[in-house]
Picture (cartoon, rainbow, N blue to C red):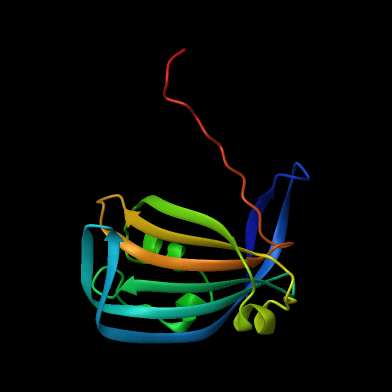
Length: 163
């Protein structure tokens, strides 16, 4: 159990949240391949991770993640109960770079209903992500699913066009 320091934009103040990770699955898959971009595929052994994140004692998000073992070695239940990104930055001394994200609405599936307490009519916010180290090596392929009343996104867009 640990605390995250999260900025709440709606309240315009800072607050601590108790975040608990329930590691539902941690396995290794060999002979697996994923598309990084439509024309590039990576092969190898991947971690297959499923976590339920609980914030202030309420189910918050289901995370489905695949990570190449050769890029992010040593992942354990202990690390997953805390923060994978902290492990990557502090223990492996890797620098996280960019990410490609796709955001969409979906209907709840059986897992959403069971673990996020969704009803049939509750929409789901789903975010799929491919994350890269600053060396452009892909290290994370994830799909996260939020209840409609738990997830939100704050987007800042800065134009590079001159007026």
